[in-house]
Length: 277
Image (cartoon, rainbow, N blue to C red; front, side, top):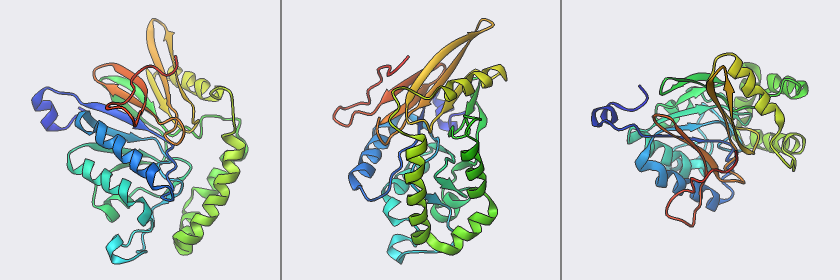
């Protein structure tokens, strides 16, 4: 039920690839190029691409046209190398799902209206079925119920009134504000921690109690995984980490193989060795 009709007819189930937290700015072209090379390398065996938020440092679904005609009037012309690659993957039949993170805003119709591609955009977490397994997917920024200040700030930013103000301000001013807020956020929530924050595993365990067998998150910037047996059933948690530092991603190869991996730009294939147990 996940693969395209052509894959079903051929009896082949292609991989799901999960990525998060690339935080691409467009100001470092090699970072963009490396991500495009990663997508090209995975393309032959990829059936789904799942972006668990924060692909770009600031990404807003502007409805007005900005930029010159040769840039297709995009608000973010510097993102075009990655956006054009996503469009190419879409045209090849690869399904793309985008779960908004804390750097993504009002993207529900952006891909369709600005790029002419059908991307499934979700503002929050949701359930997916991975070969019959109940899986919960989300960016993960709401995993820690104790971060009440962050949750309050998130409500202040992610609402229709704020989105209207951002539309009026335009991309240049909005990006300046976003860059300032990002600097504050990194200092508070993404400092140099020696190990993954425990709140993410605790969140996964709560989801296991709700009946989910697989939980996949991002946001922590730490690749992480664990297996837990509950009433004789195997439950899996993965945090895909971040592309920005670790070049990490999660591969799901149906019917049941999950692999937390690292992209090695110097080799001919991604490094599929287990990163953390």
